[in-house]
Length: 214
Image (cartoon, rainbow, N blue to C red; front, side, top):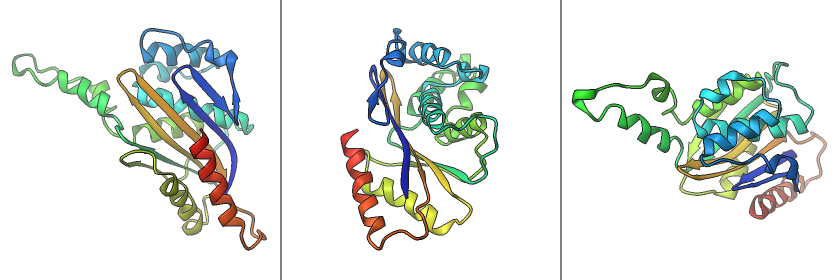
């Protein structure tokens, strides 16, 4: 498979296809992650009111996905039936889980929050990204103990090998808990049919090295 575009967001740094984005980084300002993501999304001309009701985990995922898809010349309206989403995470929605738990721990003040309940599913971020960008291919979130470069690559390659309907994949590793946030996303496409004999091996080495650098 071939990397079309990639994005890394961490702390106050935004790297898109290997280049820092100072114009965007300057808007990652605020005391809370939610405030930083809201400020950044507004500057990106985000026309998606639902964004501001999401948890930080999904907000980070939508921002990273949107940066990549825009870079690749794709809009949010055109249906994308041949694109899938595969995300990896360690903590998933643990922060949303803890916030929701606070609304149900007091028997005398039992007040479950339906908005928070909707955020406690790890794959909710896939639905948010898919709805925002009209992606209708398969999607999945995998929990793993840290970022495994080889597994990250192999899982994408396996999807292309087993599902002929998938031509592109939005892949990413997403962490957002408390005050910590980090995302690495990439858009990849299925390799050409007339590729050289060692093409997959060379692409795997390039891909894994890319992950290690960023």
